[in-house]
Image 1 (cartoon, helix red, strand yellow):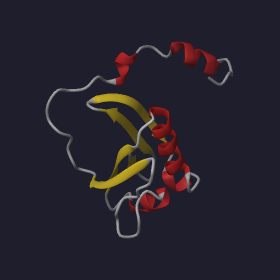
Image 2 (cartoon, one colour):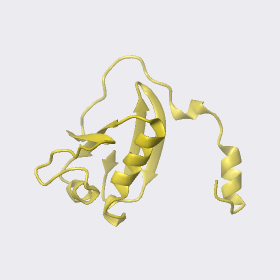
Image 3 (tube, one colour):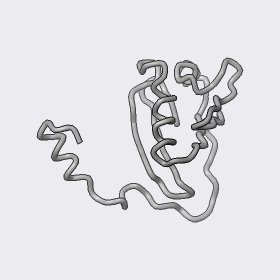
Image 4 (cartoon, one colour):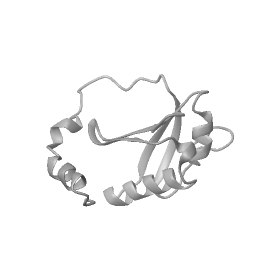
Length: 121
């Protein structure tokens, strides 16, 4: 999870494979429990606790505190559904086999069409 003043980017991985990508609004505009609730919902959906990396830098400090995913000392939150580790934004992912990207999960044209017709999927 990468909060910034303009947006919050979320990438969910299972091993090296992508499972979810999202670009949400800034955390500072969200409900105080939005990030926690999102992570709890994803953990329940996948039926296991999540390991979360919260990207951090001076610019995103307000977003991090608004998320309630880290404490005043910069340590990540931990509960039954997820454990948060705070990392520097410029951290690099491990080397090795590149995982499957979401573009290969299939087309979502049918869901897009429902949205265009005013029906919520």
